[in-house]
Figure 1 (cartoon, helix red, strand yellow):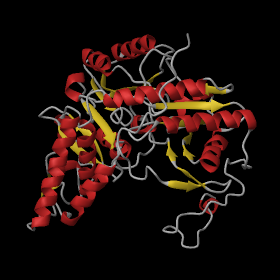
Figure 2: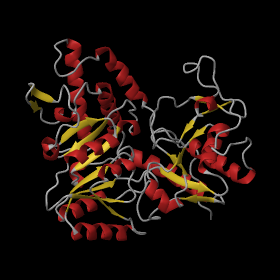
Figure 3: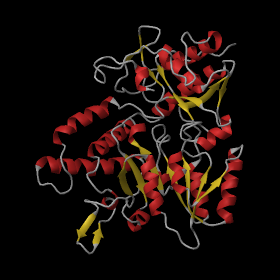
Figure 4: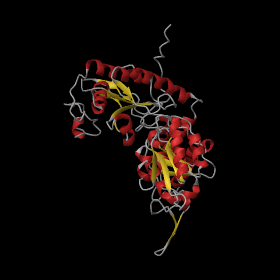
Length: 444
């Protein structure tokens, strides 16, 4: 008896801005845009865009303005801090530091990790995104992930035991494979060896409810542009003492208590690291996204994504010549993304083919994780399809059908060595170029 096919009517879990956007095809006509590039940047939730529109009439300066709009903006900014912290289970004493994105968060944290004669180094895995790799270049100790999760945890423990470290910093979910690391176990491991733990939550937080206190994490960073709030804000959340003792991330107004020509008295956190006019709109948007996701029924996000991820993995895995990239096949759960390679085609050609002939957006490249792509794909680029709240069963089916058609019959168009369609007659939107300049002219 054959198993029942998965339902074809898996619908989006939430409304995203641009969900019904039509895009031009090189083969003439238009198609509904299928956005499977959410792991890079996700469109705004409709509710987030509505909140921003609601807030904008009151936008003003924060913290020192006496006008009513300024007081409203200050209240909105500080309330956003509370909402974001609550969304990820921040402890009462933790600080919610508003930054630009996850990269910004780790660069800030890198200035704050103390170095003592006993504990100077930061330990991390080789699978990290560059945001959690490059800031540790001068004091990082790299542990190569093993072929199994058990082996990887053993390697980390051996490194922490060999020489004490100040910090263990890891991704919550790989942006290449989607695989989720066991954070509670890693936190216990770090603390057992006297180190703190920081987590890159950029790919984890949009897909799984994450509780900083319950997992016993010391620091968590994530980005609004991956959490359906693409308005330029992210956060670093965690223990206050290191950030309180660190030099100000930027020197400027708002980060000070008193300035003379001879000396400066710096403000405590979070103001200490938020010099200049903060991104109030971004913070309000990020808080609205947290509210919207928190309001989903328990387990709804995970269940929605699991059905689509299974369908995507099975569909691509059944196509001859398509190879899925994973570190620990089946050992750990994964968030909704799949990276893959197609025999006979560069990742650039595959991605542009999907866009130009099928109206499907994916990512191609090494995903700011070059060492991991070296391990998984010999340093070659790959294709990544990523799912989220706005994804549907139809989206998955269109991608699988398009890849199947590529493997079976090849592309209908011609593509250059750079992967770009040649020619590319698709026009830019008129609000960018009133003369409908071809898209390729902007990609040269």
